[in-house]
Image (cartoon, rainbow, N blue to C red; front, side, top):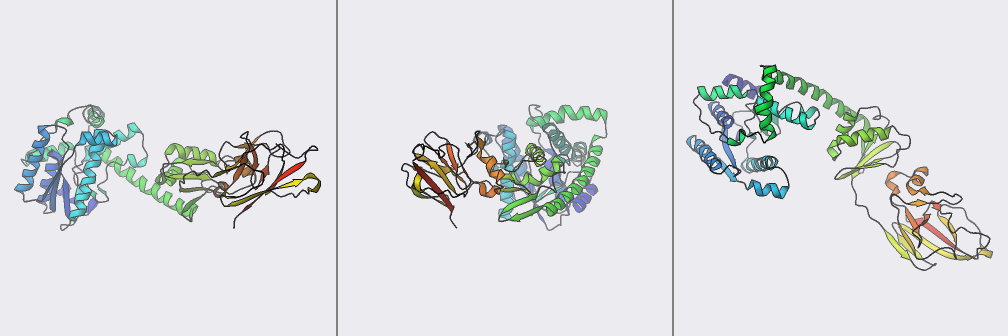
Length: 444
């Protein structure tokens, strides 16, 4: 076993004898065998132990046991007590998830504070198999099928090539002592259920299960590397960054599959279901203006690109107008009004000017940022049209759409999409005596 151990260390992890290693140790058989093999091969190690206070005196006994091993071998020893139950309620997560987060956060802190190059855990082949089966039951991609990696940043798994049976045989023949964790017997935890009930059934089908899975992990890792290279090339081919916004070329991506799309956007918090939705949208003719959101980012579909940027808070700018004569500055625009007698009226056809029958306009007016769901009856038409559709018709770039304002009357009806469209409501007629002219201009 020691020769296989050294081969794995040299080929898969490449640890040097002068590298310092912090061993994450319980009192279980895996930890104790790991410590024994590292010491026999003259590696510089220290021991770190977490007491989660979940098993009463058994937890305390584990702490004393592993501390004794450190003392007998003159190894630096770190330990900590966690109130795991309390932390589980605070974080609103399962006990197992919280325990995992607590220990890895603490291991990293100890490693950083004491200049340990690696953190070693006792994961082995069976742990890797259980992880993959667990991932499959929850749903996963390629990353969930490659098993536990021997080297992940500064986390190393020196026992990964060994099965649970091999580790037990080694511990027995080398007279290595360890303590059992009673919680490993309970099948109320999903991983234990897989270990005690699912794996034995699979081994009846294939007694050589560990070796078969190990070979499968190797193949999947190779496939994953090829796929990752493909995605990297796709990023080079289709992505450009402009002022902290990420532009993806729609034409070059619309014929990709949803998993490739997912790998392009997952780092921004978007999920697989959103990648499928996005791909469907990219094939629609009028998809411009559609927006998808993750926790911190927004994805906006424009005509040639979909654009990912940090999600900005929606700021609604508005002001109330009580009198017909006004001049206001709002949202980088100046909007003014004037009253014109019908006898001196001359029509100027410009998008930034609109005219209404003053006697028909109901005050107070509200000038505000447009929002999704706003509608207007455009001048010369009878039916209502979405403001969002009008902005698309005018080919307004997505990033500029939020700059547009609407004027809303006392009936809460939009009578103007400022700088673009006036409403058919309150239009000038033969009975009109006075006209209110509203002019708007963007500030430079």
